[in-house]
Image 1 (cartoon, rainbow, N blue to C red):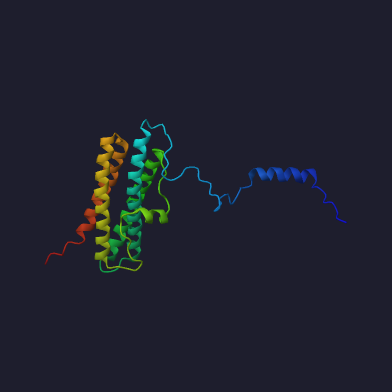
Image 2: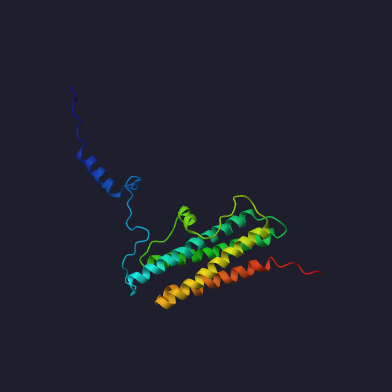
Length: 205
C-alpha cells in the first residue's frame, strides 16, 4: 500500500512560485538540437538603407578580413609571451601595444558585420578554418622570425583590405569602405612600419 504524498502548505507553494520567477534557467543549449537564431552566412534585413545583396557581399568580405585580423591579434599575444633575446623588453611591450590595437579592429569589423545584418565569425576554431595567414608552430621562434611572420600577416591584410575597400566603394557601401581605409589599413600600415624597422641591420659605430 502506497501512501499519498501530502502537498506542501500554501505558504511553501507561494514561496516556490516566487523563486521560480527569479531562478536562472540553465543548460539551455543542446548539442542534439542547437538553437540557432540566425545561420552563419544568412543576412537579415536591417534599416541601414542598403540593398540586401550588397550587404551580404560586404559581410562576406568583412568576415575574411575579420578572420585574418583575429589570427594576427592572437599571433601578437603568442609572440608577446614567447619573445626572447636582447630586444626582449622592446618587443615584449610593442607586441602587446599592437595586440591592443588589433583587438579594437576585431571589434569594429565584427560590429560592422552585425550592423549589415550578417553573423560575424567569433570562435577560434572557425577563424582557423577561414584565415589565409599560415599557422605558426606552437614552440618558440627567434625574434627575427616572429617579426617576419607578423610583417607577412600585415601585408596580406593590407592587400586584401585595399582591394575590398575599392570594391565596397564602387558598390556604394561607403561605411565598409571607410572602416577598411580609415581603421584597418591605417592601423596595419603603422604597425608594419614599426616591425620592419626592427629588421634593419645596425649601423657600424
